[in-house]
Length: 299
Image (cartoon, rainbow, N blue to C red):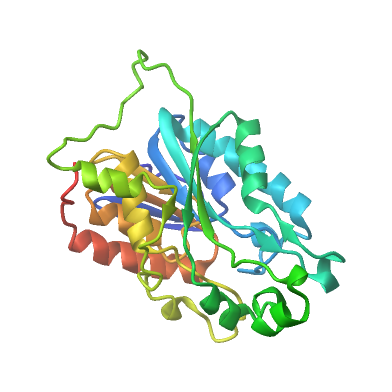
């Protein structure tokens, strides 16, 4: 693990390191090719505000500013990733808001993320759609396009719910190079029926409630947004695209979900998180996960 990183604060366990700081600044201090898998959920452009820091990508004034800021990070993600390995990004399309954007429709955040990663040198590798209940989305967002009465009034303004996506990228690499290390599995540990399920472009069986407790990360005056990625999604990604003992990086650590998912199945975790309140909770969650670390049934 990399420990001599200049940042606001840091904490370390037997199999994890967590850094409180701007992920771009943190990653610039890492050596090239030092991580084996990257998995994270970035800020959804200008939709949510997570902190008051000007370094927070969630404070972008518009989608273009977010893409420029995000591009600096993606350059570092490409550099620190081992050749031939995977970067998996959780995202979704975002509705434009009339009063804010002076237009309606959807902003193609997944497409923007693809363009930024390709510009940095990544290959657009694959994509997973995670089914979401449109009724739950309608109840949570009150989006007019999901209301039944809108269907009755003018269905041309009705739309489908917005699925989550995992957009997957691969860093090119020479398989004969010394630093190249394939991810391999054994049939007895990764049965064909599991692969057939996970190879589906749509994951229909994700438990939306399988997340870390977000309440403990909220501050008394916190109007911000925090929505941890489901642990079963994380563990599938980590199982599929890394070997036991590999190092998994998340540059938007939040409360530590990706790191916890990695530790649970025998990997090591590096987490970077800008907001101190989230970082402290992430450290607690990583400590707990490391203390009860267990081997996965998968190789």
